[in-house]
Length: 323
Image 1 (cartoon, rainbow, N blue to C red):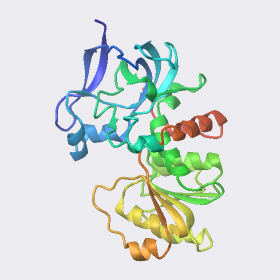
Image 2: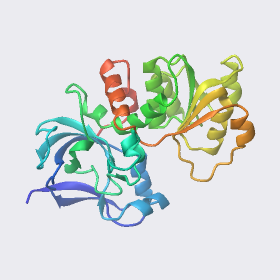
Image 3: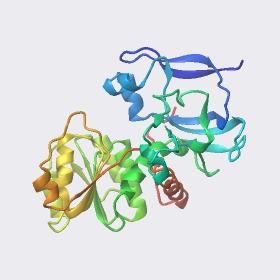
Image 4: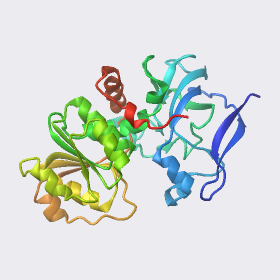
């Protein structure tokens, strides 16, 4: 049996990420075997490395981690009809049932029994891995593999941006990590009027935010963020605030910085419960709150593919290191 290299979470403790040798898996009914061209590292992989409470609840070592990839189809199992050997693909990392009420009403990204590759089941940090055919997304032949590999986080950003009406609007992005930077790039590509990027003291990330299209980059460590935004929006606040950091102060600032009847899109994950005065901050200001998880299957993927093909979306500066 052919063998391959794979990266696993080897033991239930901090670190314990190792490269091992495993047999190359065989695709079952409705599955395809993928040969990796590129993978990228998600914040989830860092959580697994640190072995936090979330990881302990989802990962059963030894398990192959990783879920962001671009690959070539190496083999197909029986029953596969839309994917063929040699296709250049990426894929949706949420494995969904397809039958629950959420799946059948266009909300498969919150399937009642979904599982994630790279944590609930073996993932993509291997030379070869298998996925259901229905999870495969074909890439444009000209798309560089490093761009193909970041469509999972780019999908998070695209989902967040399109959850509210951001075209020709004033928008603030709180948190300039990879997904926040991708959101800034998407906003620039679709024609947001003014883009405020907010980061807490990380100059490297602030420089990247400016590079990918932010109109203003605000250092929350030394600036009154809400005042700055209101001073640059005629006192009203932004039309849309997209919160991606999960930091308590940033969540509060996002709500305070949005105009009356504006939209707050929440993608960041706080580590502790968040206290918000819903009456004064949300209800009496007619604010709409939108929770974001994953990508809308397949609406987000089609939007993202078209953005990448259009040439208006510049994600190159966000890929900071390649190995």
